[in-house]
Image (cartoon, rainbow, N blue to C red; front, side):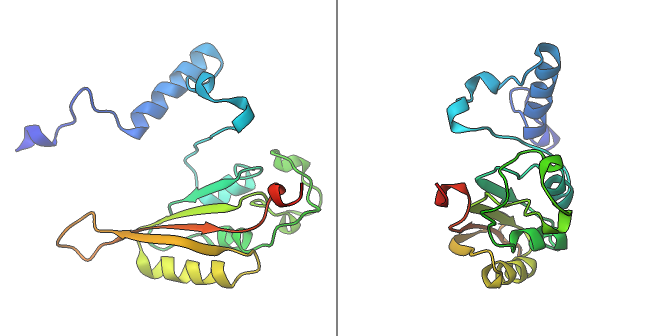
Length: 173
């Protein structure tokens, strides 16, 4: 039935919401949701980009929590390299990659993250990435992992895993 597949006018996708917010930001000079964010509790940002590009643009600098949702092939190599770097207590806090000192390969672009939420649609790649994260030098521990069968009758399983590490600014102060 074609009518049941059409989106109802009252239903909104994440893309619809983000476009509305961007339009309102352009009209008012600030994000529509900005007023609902308590500045004492930090900020939330959303960006559609390759994970490596977003990291090197500084999107994860200062972040406590990272959410990755890679394609079936898994995380990009550059992202895994960054996630496997140990916390560097000598790296200055900044949210601007231009202010990081030294060459890019020495900077830890996920230095402050202590929670990683990994959403996977490719179990083989997830297992490979998980192995690297757990054996890496960054101190990640798998706190929980849950599989979801979203397509009954298929062999497809979505996995959501939460990794934690003792790292970031909260351990320094």
